[in-house]
Image (cartoon, rainbow, N blue to C red):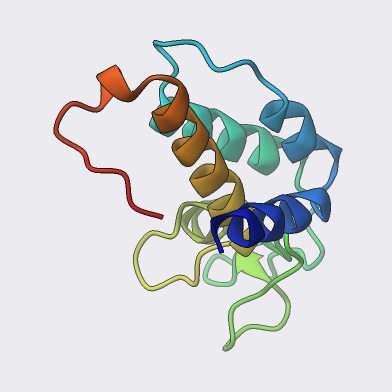
Length: 128
């Protein structure tokens, strides 16, 4: 079952654009920080995101679909407000539905870093 979950995560990651795959192909060092990696990736995604629906006034922000998963909020088919709404989607913060590609990448990395450096997680019991 665990192998199937890992393969599913890799399949989801493989659907992502080159940016995620490039950042995903890093070497895990003992001092690797998953949160910092995620924040760096979010910043790069926001930097590369192309606005699909420009703001029409001060209250209606620029919008874009998620460049990793192609998703948009249920209530706004034009995409997420850029940058805040998209950043929240990528991070899974607030009431935004989390990007499934980002979630798969983060969980894959978390599991493999734990397996490679279990001493970094003395109070954590591994659970998939």
